[in-house]
Amino acid sequence: MMKTTLRWSIFSVVFWTAIAVIFALPQLGQNSNLHKVLMSALAQWWSWGILVPGILAVDYALPFPVQRILPRSLTLLALGPLVTIVYGYVEAALKALLGVGTWSRLSGTRVISEALREMFWSMLVYCLIVGVWETYLYHQRFVSAELQTERLQKNFSEARLNALRMQLDPHFLFNALNTVSSQVEREPKLARRMIEHLGDLLRLSLNSQGAQEISLTEELAFLDHYLAIQRIRFGDALKIEMRIAPDVRDALVPSLFIQPLVENAIRHGISRRARGGSIVLIAQCAEEKLLIQVLDDGVGLAPGWSFDTHKGVGLSVTRERFAGMYPGNTSHFDVRRRSEGGTEVSISLPMHKRKETDDCLTT
Image 1 (spheres, rainbow, N blue to C red):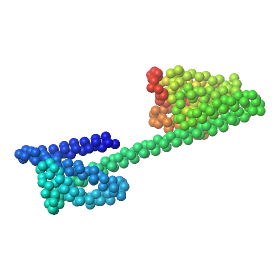
Image 2: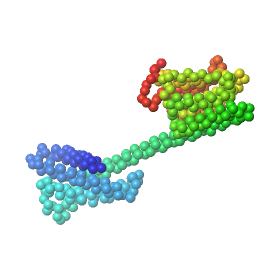
Image 3: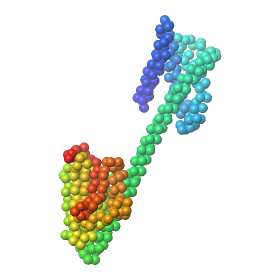
Image 4: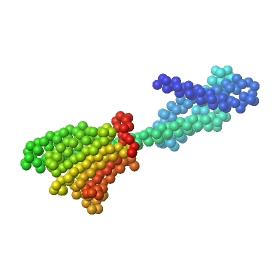
């Protein structure tokens, strides 16, 4: 605090001294008494420097908020004549101290009469000081409002993303419980194994609660437990192939986003075929982007399928989360029919990691 006050004091002295020198320059060539001209100019402008803290204190004490510019301006303007008279006395005292004036000038009404004669120029300087200060206050208020708006927008976006994330938890839990319940009577042992994996799923889900991004390795650990439940259910009818490039395992991805894609492939593609099918998960780096693909050889998309007509929670929420986390053209989310049969979900997002590493090779 003391350092800041000292810094501003030095700046004020330098500023008003520079103003005094600038206004004294035209008179220096016309007057042989250079000392008197310079000291008079310093007394004139240093006086305003002395009065500035008082002017700002009065402005701060006004009962009107900054946004009420009219009553503030009228009040400060009404105080102008009083300030100019005070200025006259301060200037007279400084001139006496600097040896270019007499102390006797402070007695009587001489200072007041001179202040009234110079009222126009004094009011001009006073209004300039007040105007600069009010402009500064409005600028600070504008910057503060911009920062507050930015924080509110960020909080709103985070709240929206958290709400979307929370929609996925009960959705996958409900579907997983349905899978377990279907095995309870027929295969109690398999049902117990499913429950164990479901418990691990819930633990991992709670661990990532509130985290919008986790590493791909953590996301795949969650997916492994989900696939373990589905393998118990489908047996050899479900084949899973992972093609995960080593250099992308530390990449940050949205939490709980691959599982809904794989679940969608199983529910709407593989489970509708008597002989089952296969799912291929690909994760690789391409052109400084992380490319995720989920391929299945199931029944494929229905004719005329689109996101507008699709009512599924998992796929829609995942796509909406991507749009919120990676706005503009920074990400890509696409679902299309494969020419050889089945469905392909293709996602690309910015490649970034917790540590500043760049193992991604441009292809």
